[in-house]
Length: 117
Image 1: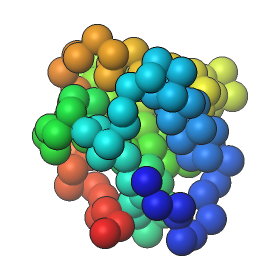
Image 2: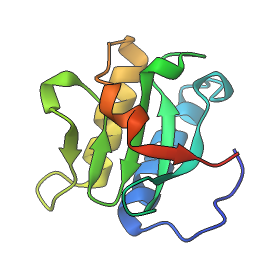
Image 3: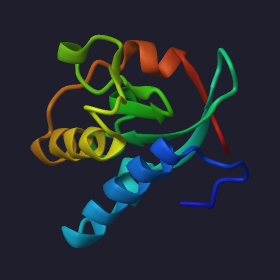
Image 4: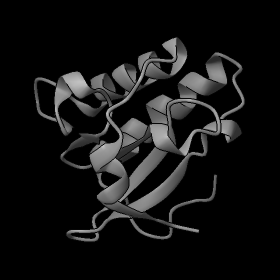
């Protein structure tokens, strides 16, 4: 995964660090999950994208400063990052979905972002 060419906010940075460290600790190759940096279409906010299932572009989730988009239909369109639900907890939720191969609510997340090449 290439280094972001734009500064990431603290919530996105925390999310990325926790998710990627989990892959390393579990000795899982992250490449099939296509981790990358992205921008939200509405405001160009920097973020992070990763598939929850290997090579499945329909399983993408996106993390921005204010929340995680597409994680699970149960959370609606966004799992908000708040003081009581910090980015580290959102990362745990994301890794749980990845490791258990759960379905994600991807529809809005795909339409809400543009990815870096």
